Image (cartoon, rainbow, N blue to C red; front, side, top):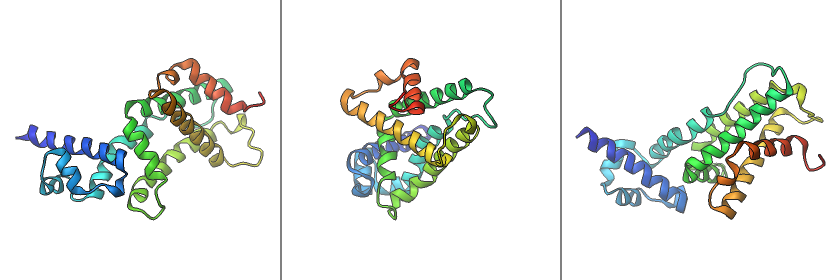
Amino acid sequence: MAEAKCGNRERILKEALKLFYKKGYESVSVQEIADASGITKPTLYYYFKSKRGLLDVLLEETILPYNEALHVTKGTYETRTIFEETLVQVVQDYIKAAATSKESYFLMLTLFYAAEDSESHMAVLPYLRDHLNLLCNMLEGAREYLNLNGRSVEQIASGFSGFLNMLILVHYSKKKSLDGLANEETAHSIVYQFLNGVYA
């Protein structure tokens, strides 16, 4: 009996993620999720209380590990090389997260770009703020190696995150997988390009 309950919960999460990814959160009904999961609406409500409750669990189980995977060093980096190696690790963490679940990764991005007062945007916003804070803390420790030129650490962190997200999206649109981005050599070249720009 316990196994069946566990199976129901995981199946609901899996089918909801597929539907949210394909159709968008707002366009999917609770009945659609129940039908795709092979359960009744009361069963879905038993596990998740509401559609928003289901989304909250989905985000906690997919995006929270994505944030926790970031290699964040507290304090000051002893050398620029150590800082750059940390950025390489962050790039690999991004790519690994996006490759592990394309559906979760794209859902995160689409929720962020949803209307700012929508239920789905409000659900994902705390995770994305936390993610930006993690990047800001990492870059703050490397301030002496950054040429800020009047920009804030938050601007640099936002640019780095946006740069990686766009790179992943473009790669997916051409290759359908992230195999070509997964190696360390490519991660080093991405970091070099971000830190030095097109004039290097």
